[in-house]
Amino acid sequence: MPKQAPTAKRSVRGSRTGRPIMALLDLLGHRWTLRIIWELREVALTSRALRTACDEASPTILQTRLTELRDAGFVELTADGYCLTELGRELFETFTSLNRFAERWSKHGR
Amino acid sequence: MPKQAPTAKRSVRGSRTGRPIMALLDLLGHRWTLRIIWELREVALTSRALRTACDEASPTILQTRLTELRDAGFVELTADGYCLTELGRELFETFTSLNRFAERWSKHGR
DNA sequence: GGTCTTTGCTACAATTAATGTAGCAGAACG
DNA sequence: CGTTCTGCTACATTAATTGTAGCAAAGACC
Picture 1 (cartoon, chains in turn orange, yellow, blue, purple):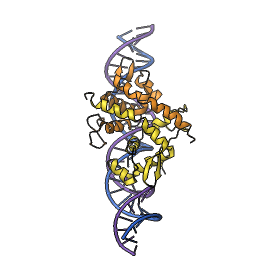
Picture 2 (cartoon, chains in turn purple, blue, red, cyan):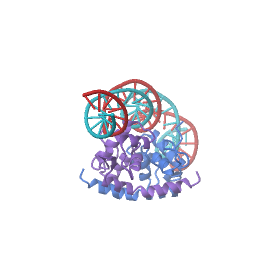
Picture 3 (tube, rainbow over the protein chains, first blue to last red):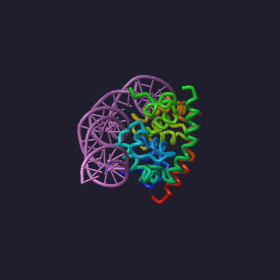
Picture 4 (cartoon, each protein chain N blue to C red):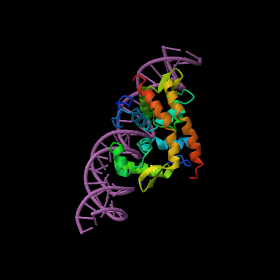
């Protein structure tokens, strides 16, 4: 049984300051989590399609991450496959500036 | 010797589409990375102070993450300790909305 | 009915990453 | 010289992730 996912109310590794940002940073810091949200940004994907989109990441960890994201209320499973919830879409909105930043970063001369 | 950090030019686990967002998501998806950027958001911290701020995370991994963040050009070591570079501060700007989202998330009734 | 195919999901051993504790060399201060 | 910091590393233990294989259930096809 996988360890329970962090939620806004109960931080896992974050300091127990009760600050939800800590729980969120902890959740998003798990491998593939950011990527999954990114891949689901505009289409629903079945578990297999998501796996393909995520460079054939192991189904074990994808399933674990999907459970965490569902527990957090960011992802749901519909007839079309996995997709972002309303809350998940709000979260993705904060990625928009991240994408713009990534473009700038790539031109930064590294 | 630690595996080399992802950069904007060379994705590691991301698909080789050349999209810098993949390299960035990969980098930020490493444990403690998001947290470190958060803790350095407004003050420079020595390695020990950063460790304290990060709930006594092991110095091994903090050092690894700091190296990655320095390679990426987000963090630098000054006389005052570790702090965000100009680029790192730009990256942190994208966190602002994330923090707002975290507050909303915590009230979402979980 | 039977048999493909695809779905979400799990088992399990192997590998890799992270933790926790200890400690190093170098610089600054007394 | 002896403290006390700094950044940083070694190393054994533990936890997370990977890769491969496969399950049961649901739908399509004949």
